[in-house]
Image 1 (cartoon, rainbow, N blue to C red):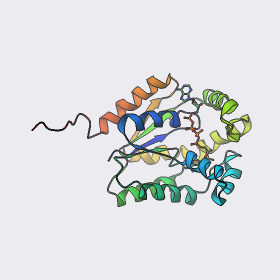
Image 2 (image 1 turned 90 degrees about the horizontal axis):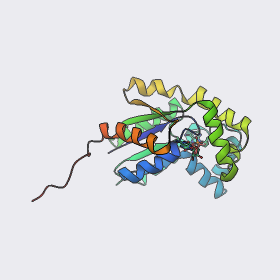
Image 3 (image 1 turned 90 degrees about the vertical axis):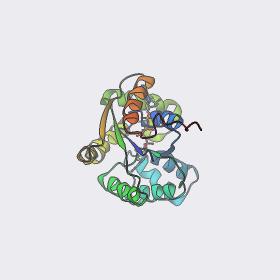
Image 4 (image 1 turned 120 degrees about the vertical axis):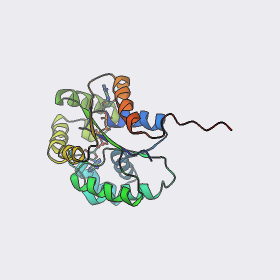
Length: 201
Ligand code: B4P
């Protein structure tokens, strides 16, 4: 099973690259940001609670996102692997994910950390905000708060995955296809199915 974590600050290209990775490697995309926005669109209790935090650029509680991921893993038992996009975002979420994957005997193969400078992150998010309709993309103060949340709560995860020998740094300030090529290079190093073709009778 090919399980990949895409790690990086808001606007680093996680969602953009996740789409390309699932297409190439035929994996299931699990984006907690997309799941939360779907809850908001459906006006569920969970969505309404998440919206107040997301609109301020704050993280939603660990238990909420861990529960959503647990449900998705249980509902995709035949998947060849998952791309975790925007999850985990705290050490508690990372520990929960390791425990869930341990049950499936399918640990994370690689954590791809996409590096982009703060000026470029702000530029990209505000540019997306002009058309995305996302409240958290439209205001520079909120964008900066998302980056602060990332630096204080999410960045410490780099040490967690470095200790497991799984973290790979990728330069994200390049055209989308160049970033994708760098990601594929790292994925191919850990993808045991690479190059396997059906045997000829
Ligand atoms: P997310 O939906 O994960 O949003 P994001 O961090 O902005 O990343 P996204 O994937 O959307 O953007 P991308 O970098 O691809 O989270 C939103 C909120 O949900 C969080 O703030 C939090 O409140 C909550 N949340 C989600 N998961 C959570 C969790 N696990 N725990 C707690 N709370 C959680 O792209 C950004 C822009 O850059 C796009 O416009 C794209 O076109 C552009 N771009 C991408 N690559 C580029 C490149 N190489 N060059 C130029 N532009 C590029």
